[in-house]
Length: 153
Image 1: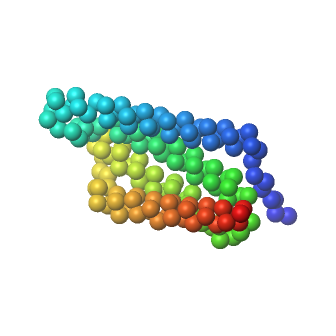
Image 2: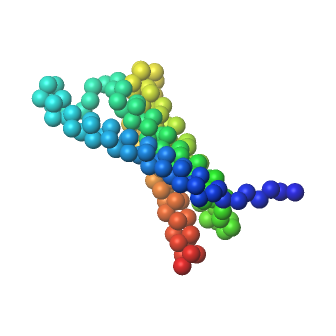
Image 3: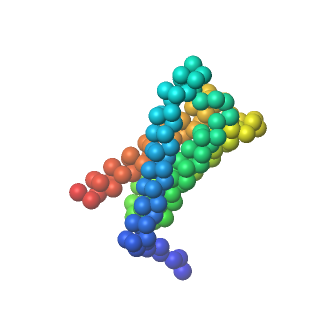
């Protein structure tokens, strides 16, 4: 007999959303700190871009990936599992799965830039990570959420 998975409790969903929000806040604060440091870097080095092998970029990629994977997990376990429409469930599943894959690409790029092993170049990242996020994550998510909103109305 197939087990039907019920959506998680409101309390556990709220905790997961709070975790995702906290990770997003850490990422935003790190981005703000780097932006505020840019004028000093410019005065010292006459260059706005951070130095090669920047560990801050790797840390940012790690925090952002943790947050995005939390979003993917919430989508997979809570939103998708509670939806009856197969097409909407499929869109949500694609968006969650693509997010995991594209953030792995982002991590490999940031790790390679910080530590030196071979890693994808920026053109390849735009063609894979960027396009994957745009079509696989963002477009599928927007379409799924629109269907969910129309059904609720």
